[in-house]
Image (tube, rainbow, N blue to C red; front, side):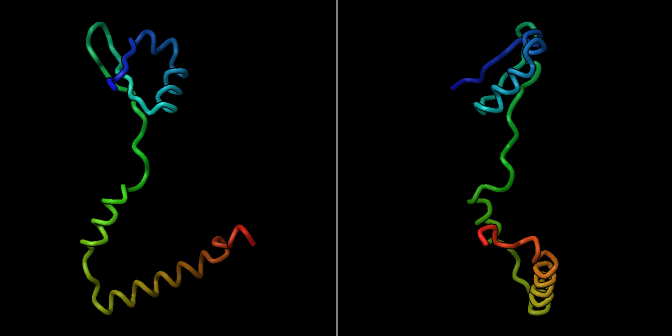
Length: 92
């Protein structure tokens, strides 16, 4: 699957349509002036990390000593208590 292309003039005439096309298909579009590609319109990368990168981060995370581990647990408890009203089960 090759990259699609559009002239800068055609892009200016059909900007909303071209943006929607990239958004829905995920296919980048090269913008040309004459015979040169001057830019590329592409969808944003998905938010977050791919699962293999997350696994790598977890496996290579530094080990916390007992004091840091306790401090982190206390911080997490405070966060849970502060946001408890926001974490209600939507099925209740």
